[in-house]
Image 1 (cartoon, rainbow, N blue to C red):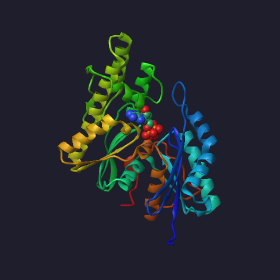
Image 2: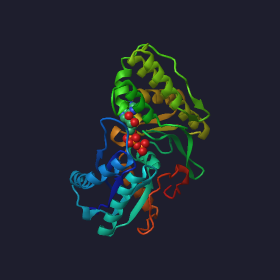
Image 3: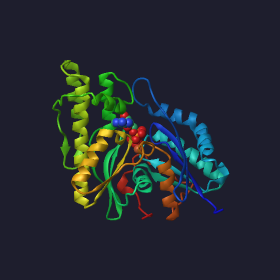
Image 4: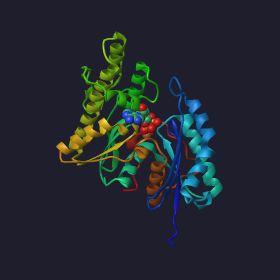
Length: 331
Ligand code: ATP
Ligand code: FE2
């Protein structure tokens, strides 16, 4: 039997504490997680950190069991170094260092946003895509150009996931809002005009949220129609900026990433736009769209194969790490 090498990936940038085992040839053997949730209110960073600390051993155990490998068989540890919530990132970093020391195997720290793109290249047929990355905090259009991954467009205020979550809270339908808004929107009949906020390649969402809150308070509109209209408006803004980046970079592949891209209506709009410009649209499965550790493991493998290895004494978290600051050594 051919000897297999394995990477253990650790993801802790936000809500999700994830651990995954991926082989060096790109087989995802397990992709486990436990997600911090609240009945009411948002994320308090220290509570998220406490959650991750509490669940880490259990998630590791189930990731190894699912993969049917032993911890001692790991050859590499990869951890998400940023961007994200500092207290949450610290839990992952500490755990990664501890495991790397204990097993005497190398550690690499990787960029969470770029990992969303590279896992898409692994599991779909995309090669050099524009990534539309839409999650809770992040809303960015990213592509590789001139030796770097660059952000061509992004939200200037809140992420589209946070927008949907806050809108859902205003409607009184709970958290996380994305899937609930999606279900409600299917029953929408009437399009209610909303501000359309695209500025060049960037978007803003705060104004639309305020407008929606006023419309909810007026009592004049059906919840279903507001959900439908919010989706149509915001998703059109996202797809428009992604299309502009594709035209600007002369790329004919679009890749989706981030939890909001689980939304079927957003997927449909992205596919339609790509068809109209003779481009291909690639959509990874939901488990790899949301925050996950498999993408962290795979990104670690790519960078390790290219020669990267962290110094355990000096490696640190990078809560504000920008996509274009990443040194691209693996392509
Ligand atoms: P980060 O921003 O650091 O990537 P995150 O934990 O917010 O972290 P994800 O797990 O990628 O990121 O996404 C979570 C978001 O996705 C939530 O805001 C949630 O409402 C949204 N979401 C999940 N499913 C759907 C859906 N079907 N439609 C729209 N939004 C969705
Ligand atoms: Fe993410």
